[in-house]
Image (cartoon, rainbow, N blue to C red; front, top):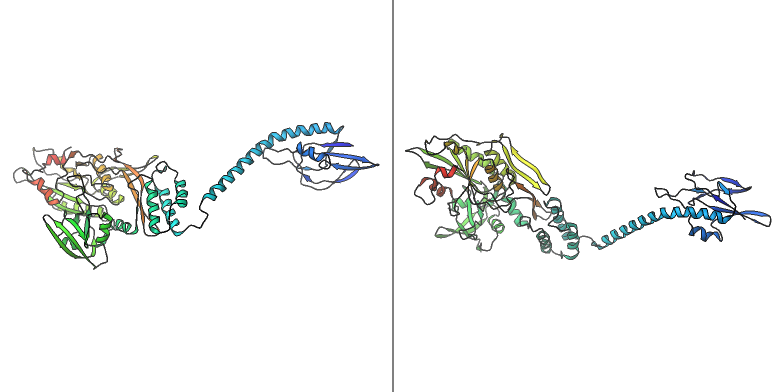
Length: 540
């Protein structure tokens, strides 16, 4: 028996033909063996080729693999029985085969390892998929996922309070009951609670509608802005009228700022949320509503007819401050109750009206402002500022955006000053007085911080609430909604006011009058307990 060993071949053309080997005609075919042993056996005067994978050689050749693998982990092909070299003894050839086998083992080990890793990854992925709900998602599941996705895209803290937001979704879909709409709402609230953010909240359709209507320019109701201001004892003093829209049903009936609303349509407001109260006050045009209102020492039952009311968030008046002799200084008092769609336009209108009455300075009262639309806060800041930064918008990576002004939208960057000799520096009247308190939050705090840090206003009052975060409102497919914290902000001096608030330049007691008429009295009557002179108002 004579054996032949084929050389390793790095590149073989893809062909199929016949070659003559020791006088025998043999067909060539493709093979993944890079080295192959072929033996010619002489038996009874006849010769035939015995292939390496036949008979007794089959097992040994597979134990000593003769494949080679290139760096791309691809087999180099060989045409069987082509270019064979004649050899002496089979055992010598087998040793050379073993040499190639060792080279193959080192290469195939890496391939095997990578193959195992890939298989394990596929199995792990398959296991993860199998753990996901295998049933079709219900309508309730889809609503939950819509809320989850909204928070995932918009929320400012991408660590989601140090938890795996994707894992929470999978666990909730497997374990949280979502068979009814109320169960789904409960699952959404539970998900939001894990963020530990009091300003990111879920609003059912009726509450979401009330929130949206509060930022619009008109609403069908009785024309009341309401709130739960903090009383002198530190607790909420009840559902209080912040302002009554001029000419609206409530104002015509004599409802005034500071009145307590005890009941709406016979339902006590004692345990009623602000959203529920707002929803009860609104209704179809021309429908009737009954209010129980406490005014000073009198309780009245009123029957009002709802109508389309324009929500004007601004009330203004002129305060006269006594001067030397008959000289008086006219101060324009502007009360801004919210930042709805009308806010910036109403402030401009009030300034122009007061300016026609020869005012020499302004008082901007933001106490108990309910906040509102962030863009309106920016626009109102531009009214008062000649130039400068208004606010820095930040996320987890730092400053993301800067809002500033070049003075092109300024309406009252400075005002002409009356000459009041020897009393104080008259130029200080060019500043605007800003009044704030703990009921001042959100857009109003941005405005207060911008006016203070740009030295445009002297800030009086109490530290503000300290809500240094910005929320955006998102509507879900069923009419409910989410208020999601999308950013935090810093004042122009890079002060983060979250949980600290805007610190006033001068304090004022919490009992200081909040309505315009009483406030003006504190400027006019030097003998009043709340008296403020001009130096206290406009100096730092």
